[in-house]
Amino acid sequence: MTMKGIGDNAFTATTPYGLRDEATYAGALSFLRRPYTRDLADADIAVTGIPFDLATTNRPGARLGPRAVRAASAQLSWGPPWPWGFDPTKRLAVVDAGDCALDHGRPADIPACIERHAADILDAGASMLSIGGDHYVTLPILRAHAARHGPLALVHFDAHSDTWRDEDGRIDHGTMFWHAVKEGIVDVARSVQIGIRTHNEDRLGFTWLDAAWVHQHGPAAAAEETRRIVGDARAYLTFDIDCLDPAFAPGTGTPVTGGLSTHQAQSIVRGLCGIDFVAMDIVEVAPAYDVAENTALAAASIALDYICVLAQSRPDAA
Image (tube, rainbow, N blue to C red; front, side, top):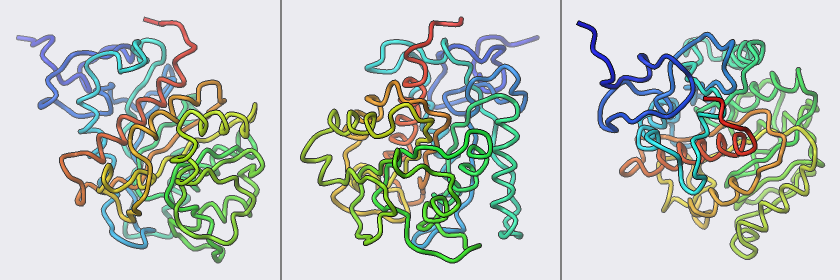
């Protein structure tokens, strides 16, 4: 006997379109219960995990971030998200492409492996939504995108600028944007870093809307200023979950007090409609330090808002 309509949509769904009601506490876990597939021919967005945290300078554990964010996203997969009022997966074909396969015993090979993984997804014609992993993973993903699009505007949410000076060849989650600028794959004149609250004398030309600026001026002003700076450039959105105050996101490796609330961050992301985003990542979720899935749920919710930003101007496809 064939059982139908009883869940496990990660494996049983026959279309990448549309959210489906499924018990949040049971079933196979994918991001938003999207179908698992490596066939990306018809996919608009491929969600993929990058389970790497060897570049972490403080508490490890972000390699388990993709698993935790997928699990938390089950709470968001039953219907149209608030406040959007529409199902973005009826407008965009969103699939879960699984995780990047990494050999932890060969750490020097991992950056190239991540870059190849990103290139394969782009070659298939899909846009990436990556779940880290520590923040270093953004650099090889950026390299793959810049190889196709040229230098990208960077919209970067973080407690840290991640632009500290480094040596060529080092793998560090606090220096990858120094490397990105030196490699010419980021257009700093069109880039903005949001939520910063750690000192760095050299901003490398990035505009900061630091945490104090956001608290003073508010999310709407932050979104407006970000849209102004980016303009019509192609952009990459990277969100380090430690942009949020530890009260809202304790499950991360390098927490810094005085950060954004989940509401502030989501309001800014929701206000970025119209920017030409080519991809997004959300990183640094370390579930061992989380409380009641708060951090993982915040990450899943912000990723869902990004999908809605991309979908808001598209008609329903199914």
